[in-house]
Image (cartoon, rainbow, N blue to C red; front, side, top):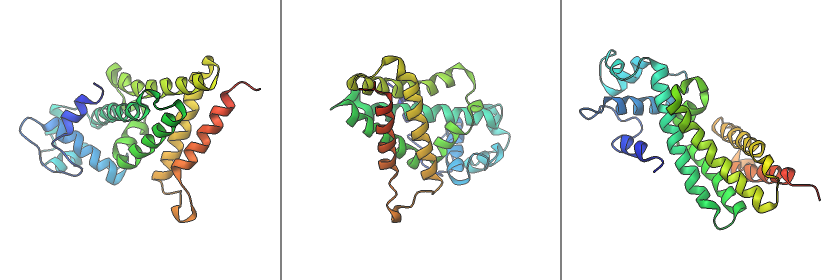
Length: 214
């Protein structure tokens, strides 16, 4: 089951929680990094600060992580694992119809970024943080879910199956851009700015552009 490991690893931890259960230092350090990323951004903490947040010596993290990048890679891996699960759940095999499910998936994308800014920043700040085939596989799993949804939408609309990958990448770029602008505070609800509606409108335009001209 997608996300099983991350649920198990993080079930005892909440944002900003200090300390750790015996034997749970690795998970506690990942949770500390998650909280510090949310508070200070991608470059806002060191491995020593993560250790301080947990309440261990600065040497203790090296039992599990070679360096800060190694810790960030693990945080990104778990983030993509959870992200893939959320997107797949929102897609729900395209029920009740492909476009409705696709819109729901877009909202899940934005909701994840808003609810997990630390994870989202770790996932997308730098591909270099995804060290090893296992981490890359988890990241690809999230895109694979988006790809399957894009294929479902185009198939239902009579689109060309050879256009699926470029369409999926365009949707990804649109969703990521909308999420980042939202996190940065560039949308103003007081003026009627609605990130979900903006994403929906952009996605509809991309769908229409991918369909054969009649």
